[in-house]
Length: 139
Image 1 (cartoon, rainbow, N blue to C red):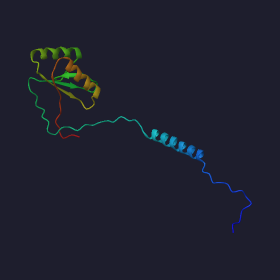
Image 2: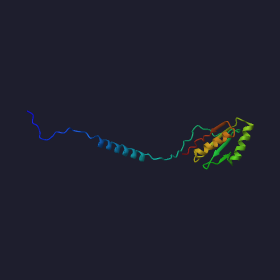
Image 3: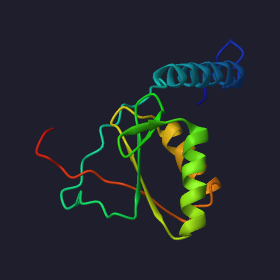
C-alpha cells in the first residue's frame, strides 16, 4: 500500500543560470591570470663564435666593421656613410664582383647591421657576406 505525504511533491530542478554565471566568472578569472603571467622581455643574445672560421683576409676584399654605436670602419679606419658610399661605388665600378665582408662587434644591434647591409647593397655591391670571427678561446 502506498502512503501519500500531505506535502506537495515538487519536481527537482537543476538551476542553470547560476551555473552559467560561475562558468563565466571562472573563464574571466583564468583569462586575467593568463594575461598577467605573460611578460614581454627582451633577450640578450650572446651568440657563439665559429670554431672553424679563418681570419685570413684576401687583398681584393672590403672589410667593414660595425661598432656598437652603428659607426662603420673600413680596414680599421672610421668612415662616414657618404665616404663609405663613395668608396663602395668607386670599387664597384672597377670590379663589379668585389666581395664585401661585414663584421659587427658583440654589442652592435641587429638594426645597425641590417642598415649597413642594405647600404652596401644600395651602393651596387653584389657579393656581400657577414664575416665570422674565429673563436680565440675566450668565453
